[in-house]
Structures are given as C-alpha cells and as structure tokens.
Amino acid sequence: MRGLGLLALLMAGPLAAQDLPALYDVSDVADYDVLNVRVAPDASAEMIGELAPDSTGIEVTAADDGWGRVNVNGQSGWASLSFLTRVADQWPDGQPAPESCFGTEPFWTLSFDGPDMTFEQIDAEGQTGLVTHRARSVNRTDRFLIAGDLEGAHMTATLSQQSCSDGMSDQLFGLSSEIVIGGTLYSGCCTMQSR
Image 1 (spheres, rainbow, N blue to C red):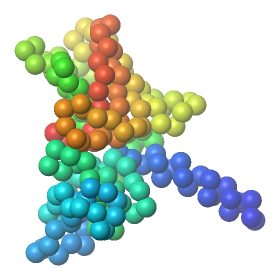
Image 2 (image 1 turned 180 degrees about the vertical axis):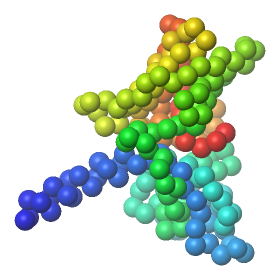
Image 3 (image 1 turned 90 degrees about the horizontal axis):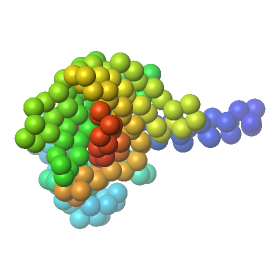
C-alpha cells in the first residue's frame, strides 16, 4: 500500500508540470476588485499589474507554490492561482495546442486554427497550409512535434516545454520552438493565448 502512495506522489510532479502553459480565467474576484500581479510569487512582493475580475484566456506559463506566472504590461509577473480557474480541454492527446509561435529579427508568426496554419513575415506574403501530424516525444514528456505543408514548403515545428523570451520584452512564455520551413530554421516562442 505504501508503494502505491509513493508511485502516486512520483507521478503527480510530472503531470502537474505537463499542464503548463495553459489558459485560465479570473474567478472569485469581486466586480469592484482586481487580481494583483506581483514581481515575485509572494503576497508582499511589489505589484506590477492587475487583471480585471472578468479577465479570460490568461496564459499561465509556470507555477510556483500556488502562484502562476502571467504576462501583463509587457512583463512577466505572478498572480495567485487561488483566483484563476483553468480553462478545460487545452492539451488534446497530452500535447499543447498553441495559438501561435513567433520570433523576432526577422519578425515572423506561425498561427494555428485547428488543422489550418498561416506563416507570416514582415514584408512578405503570408503562406497558408494544413497541419498533417502532431506527436509527443516517446522519451521526453516535454517535447512535441507539429508538421504540415505550407504552399509547397514542408513545415516541421519542435516545441519544448521551457521558459522562452521573445528577446524584445520582459515577457516569458512557456513553450520554445524550432521551426523549419522549406529548409530555413526559425527559433522563437509559442503561446496558447490569442495575440
């Protein structure tokens, strides 16, 4: 019996880590109040922003002892998970379903809408296509693949569950990406949130 309890504890850690990034809605905050976002996961830490009581689709990119890391006002901060409710059905088949991946210098975005995808760069016409395959690594639970075709060019995206900076702001995202399109490699971050 003790062995079963130990197994459950060992499994709880990796499963919790696999849940993020994910979208949350603010909950249990009075209509006249706000949810404070702080510089560190501590109720006495400096406040750097706030979330309205009716805020929805807030991306939590990491967790630390009851706090969730979120992006507000162009920077990363921490909000109490006691006032955030996870939106259901975000990781189909145990894999993240990002809204978009993006990078800077050059600026690019790969957006997803179900099986459809669009790749855009500054000063270039967008390419559209279809996702044909999604997979999770057989030996790493924090690595994922999205593959498809964009108007004649094959696209392969490898996503990693880790902190990622866009290099242009103080925001932190929960997925990094390496994307190959027609032999060209693009590196960046991915988000579950609409941009």
